[in-house]
Image (cartoon, rainbow, N blue to C red; front, side):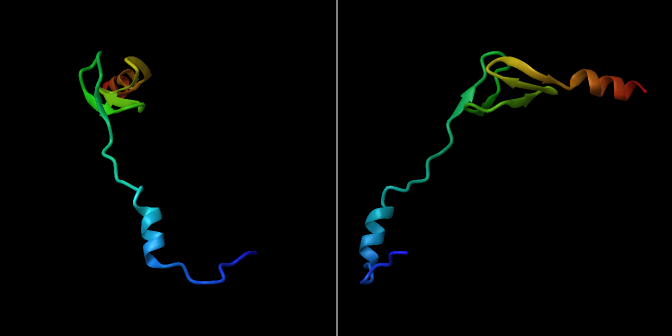
Length: 69
């Protein structure tokens, strides 16, 4: 396995790492529910998992039937 013959300077490593930046997550507002959520992620709203304005999982019926028993 190849290894460097000489030690790299700290400046060389720092120059390579200058392009690593922390970026804040982009937050969007759902057109249907009006809730803020991370882009390209499903989010829970009133017991429903919503993605792109469509219900993916609906847990409200399971919670209501469990409470009725």
